[in-house]
Amino acid sequence: MKGRVKVTIVGAGNVGASCAQRIAEKGYADVVLLDIIEGLPQGKALDIQQSANIIGFNSKITGTNNYETTAKSDVVIITSGVARKPGMSRDDLLITNQKIVSEVTRNIAKYSPNCVIIIATNPVDAMVYLALHESKFPRRRVLGLSGVLDGARLATFIAEELKVSVEDISPCVIGEHGKSMVVIPRLTTVKGTPITQLLPADKIAKLIDRTVNGGAEIVALLKTGSAFYAPSAALVEMAESVIKNKKRVLICAARVDGEYGIRDTVLGMPVKLSKNGIEQMVKLELTTEEKTALANSAKAVQELIQVMKLK
Ligand code: APR
Image 1 (cartoon, helix red, strand yellow):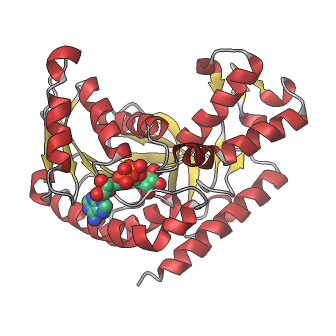
Image 2 (spheres, rainbow, N blue to C red; image 1 turned 60 degrees about the horizontal axis):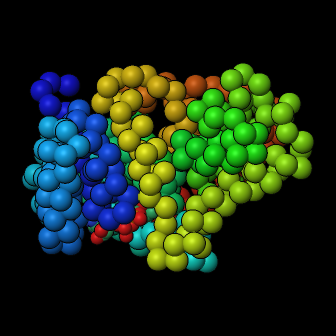
């Protein structure tokens, strides 16, 4: 990437504005914040910009309602869409968010044909599939937020239980970012020791259950929207691996085409993220039981994909 890195964030709501703030404060990229509501992205951008003297960063933040301003972005984070209300599942958002993500993706692909797209909008696995379809980008350049967030939630609960630093926990949550997500305790470690050796099975089952319902727990508390602090932290970790060509191995929603015998769908998988996007999908050695759970997860996502009736 030449010159200043340019990151566009579509959607200036809770997740989008929080991403804009985090990236601005890192200082390594200029940020364009786009929304359909007039004044909202401009106001939030100006507010974040005015924190620069206090926080100490040199990123430029621009708010806009116009895709021309987003032209030639290196990374685009899509957060536009409706969020959950209490009692809703991520799947309930499908049709509304399909329309929004279709339109947004077409515009992004037109103005930034070489960017890497990172999607937050739910149901994220279906939205990644949709964005690949609409952008016609290669599979390496469209990914979504899933395992980094679900894993961070699991790590939080394990740290509380074991009274160890959350930083030393390496979680493994793959599959759908939804009810059928596959938490793998065998591959979730505290500096190399699997949690299966540190906690009884019934305790692990409770932690898994809380992780699967981690987003819903927050929706029930907030009542007016869904989580955004941890989601934005996860999105920025993913974006940073692309921006800085770090080659982090992060669990992201990515197109699966033959891996584990699963085809033509999107699932959370460990992927190596470099400046070109997904450089490689890292293969895990899964047990028969884990493979079955992953196949079920694939089925759940495929059902959503079918509902979208993409042509
Ligand atoms: N183009 C641009 N922005 C749009 C469009 C569109 N077509 N449609 C909606 N938006 C904007 C809204 O105006 C709003 O500002 O998207 C923003 C969404 O913000 P919030 O309602 O605060 O939702 P948020 O909590 O940020 O969640 C956004 O991310 O985590 C997921 O499930 C969540 O799908 C949801 C998305």
